[in-house]
Image (cartoon, rainbow, N blue to C red; front, top):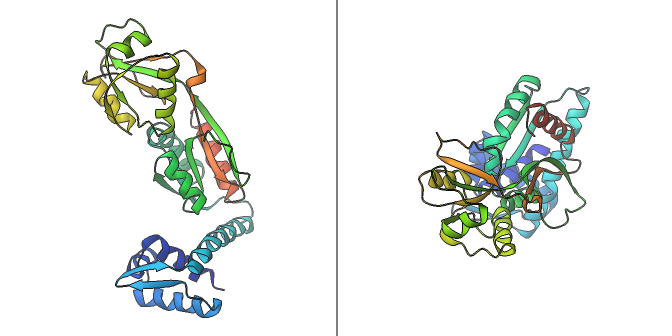
Length: 289
């Protein structure tokens, strides 16, 4: 079986059309269709169905794509081993938005300086989205919040840092303590169904604080802008954002590590592990702590 044809089938699954896969692969639509037909003849099953220009996978097609992604990862790993230890290839990295602004930039600089032959593709997403992409083989690893449930055995975890829960309030707001500030000021919250939102909600419940919610937003940087404009206060993990009078925000740790979150690299064992190890080392060498 030609692994290039497997790559083409995976591209069709990602794009949802032959034309989209053709653009991604640098092929003609006719060439993509011919490769899919060759795969179907070799396997003796139908892999796709067409409805106009749209393409959907059959049940057999979905099974082949899942197995095919794993085969392609293993072929890439084998190629890397054959290159006498020289690190090269492509590493697809998912990242939550806060890490994109704090962890990723210095790490990319370090990777560019020390591993220029590793091509990095950065994919943004929420923790739940990144987990789904990792399970589906769309990414190789993810910088994300550690799941609250037990991590499956096929996945590994490298801790990057602990981010304590922090009160964020306007710099000019008179400060009389964390609980007093949260009780008396409008609250700008992270989504409650997000890992950070659940941590903040647990803190409020444990401290019996009834917050006056103004907005609920799944974007920490947007929340910081709104706080700096004096619209309210928030509870956010301290992911490295600056607190200053120039930025017009103040941050104060709530003082209890039980409400912090753990951020690290979640990865599938055996998938480009040497590249992931190099990326993890770059995070540490890039000054992230």
